[in-house]
Image 1 (cartoon, each protein chain N blue to C red):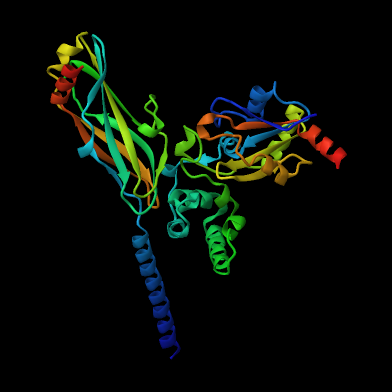
Image 2 (image 1 turned 30 degrees about the horizontal axis):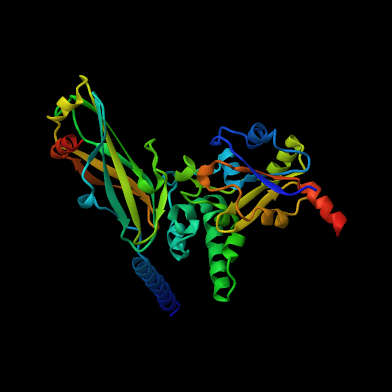
Length: 180
Length: 221
């Protein structure tokens, strides 16, 4: 008899805990989290901002937004250009990005809170330095170069690192050179 | 006739390699007189005490995972790592207990009980809470703020010193002060946040002529 009551109590406690857990999961699901979206498809075309005999600087602006239900913090954001020397070795490439609302030129990303349904813009800068001193000539054979935009987020959930990709296209470089 | 004047002192970025009292002496020596009060921003005091961590260094507990869901989004405790950081100092079970008490108190219309019981929950600043390069860190409240204030006063031979937590949202609190100061009055003087925002690098503010003004006020009435 006592054993039967004890088993019922244990089952009851497990049931209550399971129900509370399910309610919590439902609450967390409804509450949601931050969800960042880097709108690479709507980035501006790369433009030539500086040129000298051995150096050219190109820039683009990429919009981003928080499409989630909660605010989130972008703790870090940096570009990772992908141009192996096996593919092209006439230029040294440097890239950096900045938040256009907190413009800086040191490549440092200042952590920023983005509220739900708000966003901002990134300015991505690519500097190409000719190894043999003639950047205009070298750029004529520059290939399409992917640039990963890597960002670290912390919000209601655990921190994570995601990346989005843009491409500095050879056609954009040639067009920008012609317009300059 | 003496008048109160708030003088923000610009410094380089202070880090855990610095001593707050030495730094105040270095940057404020020519400004501070015997009638003045030196106020130091609490986050900078905490940073010089190496009281900060990074989200990457923390392993969130199940208590933090549950509790952070019930904190309004704008608070540092809404973040999983902000909550966990506070729990690292206060203890996971104590924080959970304080949270439950705070929740029950809120049901009967009393707000802020959790933050009163769990001091680190109110003092911990989540990421973005302070200036680069510490914007990627969670900064705790300072240790022994009264002792720090007393050391500043002794070294600078001024009227008093305090460690203040002030923000642009008209929230001003004195976390620690040297003997003889009225923290509520000092908090009111600092209410407009003369420390400026993070990038202004003015973590020290001198309240000039405080003692002289207080003396005049006493004589007049």
